[in-house]
Image: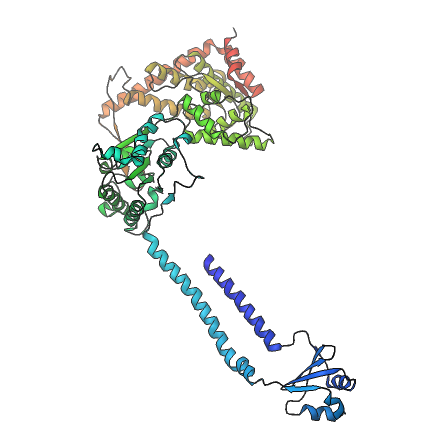
Length: 606
């Protein structure tokens, strides 16, 4: 549409220019002045006229002072006879140069040829522009099967990424360093008969840096990098996906050595036979072509295929067999040191105040991915700019942590005094139980300011990284989750809808303890149920029961028994610390937020 409008505008401008020129030539008046025959006679008698050019019935007149005039006479009458009739003497006429212009050729051009040629010329222009568009559309149709992969050249320093730009994930970088070494020195490996893996699968949670790491491999090796998403292969038309796969590998082989990176591989590499259409499904045909291409090039030719996914469990087994994606690189969540290093990279170019300690920020962000940490500093920059500051302070950093975790403050969500009191006691209940039980992580902040979907929140962050949890730690966490529910029961005699999310989490976690973790003394070391994914008109997770209805009833009773035990523990603890709960709630009602240091002081007071 844009191309059509552009061509139409060009055509309109050309038409107006030609029309203007035609009008100007046809009129031929330029800057001349029209006079009457009487005025002409007076000027001749006054000996002012130098030349008269006769053009049919038109008289073009030039005076001695180079002024131009024009007038008209009857076409069939002679100029001499007309002027003689007006009383001009032969002596006056002898001083004037009179000439006749032959206009037959011009008349023929303007009256006969131009009316035919001009429409024909316009028709040729229209045909040219429209044929150009049709030709362009035809070429687009031929290019429909070409891959949409974006190529990054190693010489482009603006987008070049190296391992120095990727903080953390040390093990993953070590695993990929041999790929870089092979692309730089292939003879060293070929001499020993080694075969470098054709495909490397990067597995990790969203935001862990899979795409960044793939670009860093290409940057370190100094080879072309072809980047495409798995969803870009699939189109409505059958066979387009397979054609794009062939075209992608063909382009990569022309630029050897090279790296092909397929992001979100699970979009096209999902297990076959699990969806609609059977083996004729377009997605499955595309996957088949990828499998063929991975088998179709010889090892050690300098072409490496990297792919990224956060769902390795649903990939087709044929993709993961030896000879295809047989090397799997796991990208874990960054630990404390890695988070600090990531923050230092993303802090480049940002004016941080001297009070900021990135190590403390890293301690307060467990579970954050690299993308989360980048978003955190970006949010802090936006907050500082909004407050007209010249640099980013510690307050903006800590507030941004809460924005990333829970969302921005909802200042329009105004609670009544009664609701504020309920929220204050609810959050105080969570915080006190977390402080008193050893299996809970320390409380960093308590607030009754609405954020996201929460009317208030208790920010609990671990001091050390943990990979394993015990049953006692789970029970302590369950008791802390029920702390808000119990506090509402004790001080208001009934509970509100504010505890709904806590109860949902308690029920889900308790069921996992029994059915997945084998932490129930009643059932012993066994699990219940098998999760499987059904792909039918979307994604659906179902549980296949491997136990009887009798065991299902027993599981429900055990879940209730665990929850009642944790409820009683929370109730007993809050009963013993009723005064501290009240003191903490009053402090929250007055100040709305409380930081860790002040909270610990309140809890340590007798």
